[in-house]
Amino acid sequence: MTPATATSLFTFDEYLTYEDGTDTRYELFRGELVAMGQPRGQHAEIMRFCERHLETAIEQAGFAWVVRQAAIGVRVPQVGRRDTSRVPDLCIVPTTQWEGLLNREAVIELDEPAPLLVMEVVSMGTGITDHRHKRVEYNIVGIPVYIIVDWVDVDRNNKPGDKRVTVLNLVEGFYDETVYRGDQVVEIPTFPALKLTANQIIRAKV
Image 1: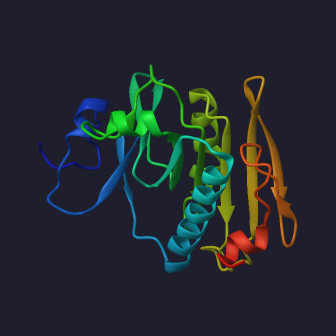
Image 2: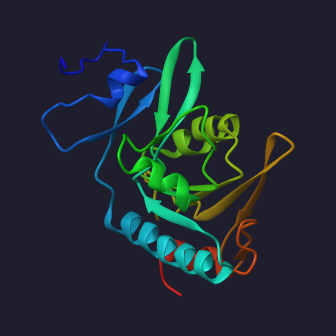
């Protein structure tokens, strides 16, 4: 496929087959490719920490679910005839659904069940995307629980970061929001027995 330009717009099918000769991964936002940059080390630590604890919670609850790190795409309904597809930092789906993705592009289509839970760890410059755009998109798709982790000490404007964990719980078609900071225990509706504080998640340490 022809390399993307600043004005290139892609359909969902074109996005799935796009190759630019690099290892860069992309999301698709209203027809435009959005590069998924290399995260900072702490971003990766938080993702791995949460992945481990979610896997343990799944096992202890006896659920036939899997959690995958930046491996499952989620297609979002078109806006103005332009396609959107996101790749959450962490995504939980039933094991059978994951097995169905093994031999095709690992993107959950519009006519397939939504993920059970997704998490985004906010990077420099992705705050608006994670808190606003993806909140609307994941709501539309019908994802029951969306967790956002803000962890940076200072933001891109050199102002102190608002370190917090935001849990969005889908109730009657809308997200109810609860924000946790410091030593507050983060209540995740999907896993009521999981008792991690906001600080533990942000520091990636128990």
